[in-house]
Length: 239
View 1 (spheres, rainbow, N blue to C red):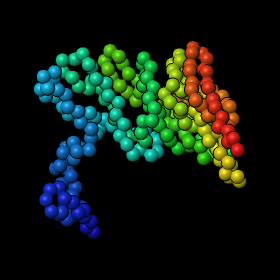
View 2: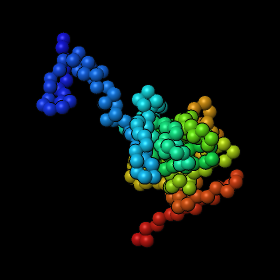
View 3: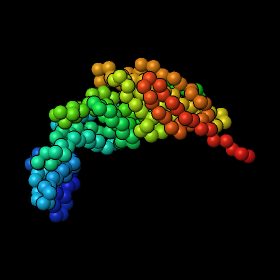
View 4: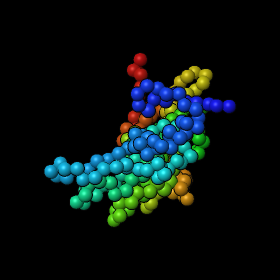
């Protein structure tokens, strides 16, 4: 059995057998990687080229067990005081995106929409609620090294980056969920506060307050020490 691929590396399309196609890919492998992997270019103050290259090699791209990984997320540290500008450290990971970002002195958190996976259960109604995925990166201020250290997710959606905080090494965040009654199709909102910590690469739940301010949505959040202040609002149809 011979299978083939119709490819056009340059010029007219060429039909190749499977063996020929594999040989072509192996021969062009470095160029193919350069075409798909993110690159960087650094210039001096006089606009002279200093250096350039890949932000991440294929072997350095991490693949966590998370669905819907259709984008390549890069977290890069740049030493702005160096005589040779450019990345000091970079981490690449397939992810759904980067909707919100929160940074503490030691860690960087990236949040985005994700599917429901039942970590916390469902707050009333059916489970048609949005979830928020979490990627935690550690950052060393002295070396600039960045590492992906934990992943996780919680029900609901963040209002903005101010709905997140890190306190005593624990992540705190407030989200809003919407649940639809299958009989009336009436949507009901609720809010929740979660506290999570990194446990061997998993953002594990330490505690939560759920069903806060039913049928209202979060407008602002502020964390002060061990307290969280949450402002909610309820939309009312005047008719």
